[in-house]
Image (tube, rainbow, N blue to C red):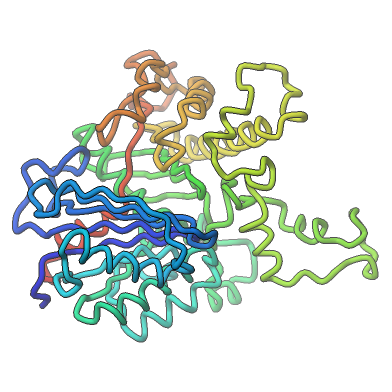
Length: 455
């Protein structure tokens, strides 16, 4: 068993690394801070983040949060030319951990790694040679994330050999999805042999949101039916029935479903072949077609699509500010690329909300916005809320919607009681509209702490 009581939570993005350090508590924390729930067993010590890893200079932020810590009040931000990849980003963090917070790597007992694709893993696993190789094998299915996570995992094993590294998978939450939802209409023998099915992602976020909303509504999580929107540079939707994932928009890989900052989202499968056709038009003449390598197609759809290719920016806040949302002319999207991106994102979100509403037979307790865009975009929430009124959701409260991104509440209601339309068969559920400030790093660390077998 580890001798230390510190837990490091690492969240590797395609060009970023979020790091949070917690201390383990022997009992539940009476005041864990905004939104961490009554089952919190970890105390936040510090936060760090590295962004622009693949577009130097990288931006490094480091902030000590624990007021009782000897180095409390430290709040640093710097540009670092030496950071070239995730491994050097983590090494820089370790140097600053000793310098800014006087914490030695040997004091860390566990390192929790968010790993996007976990294949058929049904629970977190300690990283050893076998599990490392399996995660490496799954990198092909999550090209933007698993590779980055593996780079950090390798650095942790090398630089912090006394700490135990644990992989927490985004796919685990969705293991409850029924076979008829998870399966694709292809040869099932081949599908099973190659693991070709819907896995779903953002599971750590959905697990956090479910627990947080259950606490907010004062209901057992297993009694809740929710439609949750995790909206960020990578975006997905999830239907939760009786506390379990019923369906989600992402599939075999994170590429399917909603469009993102650089991802296409769901498209006609044959589009990529026409998109890369040398003739520049749809043709069935073999001599006019160019061979499309799988990796080339994945690169186009994962990195050269989404809002970036439509608008020139991955910042959805900038897109929203330039979208001319006050203009009701239906043709505006044809001349304003930012409005095209905004309306397209809203449209695709509504596709999933409507579908999941039917799958839940109208018995929905809440529509929940989470993720960076879900938590911050007042305008997007307003547009979606306006449309879901027709199926009985409560009316959006404009003042509360404006305040949602500023509140310290974990879950914040932005709709008004009793003003939704009555929908037959809805079972008397209120259909609230909520914003949840999700925290994947906390979810991992708290899970690690509450697992008595690890201590």
